[in-house]
Length: 372
Image (cartoon, rainbow, N blue to C red; front, top):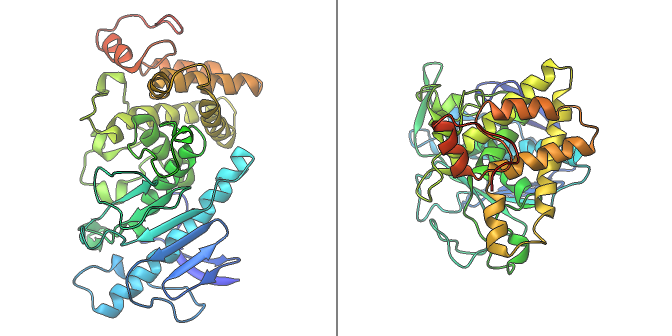
């Protein structure tokens, strides 16, 4: 057993809430740690760990104005924070799915030579080409999370905090959501692609589901609130799960941000979660339906050519149908509530996304199952 210090795992993603936790079955290297199903490595040349005491001070994220020793401590904290949260998330997901996910590798700072001020994260699979940040080495075949070291400061209760993604549980959980969708819904039908020629481009359903996973694991709708509080709560860029988003805001073009389009899906899921709780159904039961519906999506496709299946898997109505089918197979407790909530946001089965947007904007009647 190893004692560690991390940002609090639930209720809020705010970075100042530190808790001490016990890590089991942890292996500690010079700048990496391994937990069951998770390996997290800082790719810098410095040694970060010199003992089995993992109780580091986050040093307000580190950053360029900290002394070197404090920047190293902030990086060590980030490695531990990521390992704890991913292990916690994988355990929760396995309980809901009834099975585990493949092992997950995380590399922090891997893109430093080309993007030293990158403050984001992404989930990568081996591919022939990449739209941004080429890989020096192929990512793990089962998927890999890359995190930057941070690019800017944000104000947290009046003090500057360097927005290091490894310190941000919401970013970590969002990328874990992509690992979940890859090995369940498989929105890009990667299972049929060569191992070294996977597709990494994310669609709105992938981004929205990953935001929902972050909200589920943090138990908060304002998943990115501490570093996006400057964005109005009414902006899609804030990506609050409790926003009143409808298909009227859907873009759908290749140039549109799938994160923003995905917020429409995520908020419909979150609203359904709240509504079924009002009906006496536990949030965990709804979360289980959502995750198992992803498995149902991934099992579809044997009846269609690849291009048609890719198109089907990007449709909100198709994903909703999988959720309703999963509910029926589990006894049909929440389907009527879910249909009502989704319909109130312009999402029903039987139409493609563009049709849903145009009909909602024109306020034309939507009848489930009556589209093409």
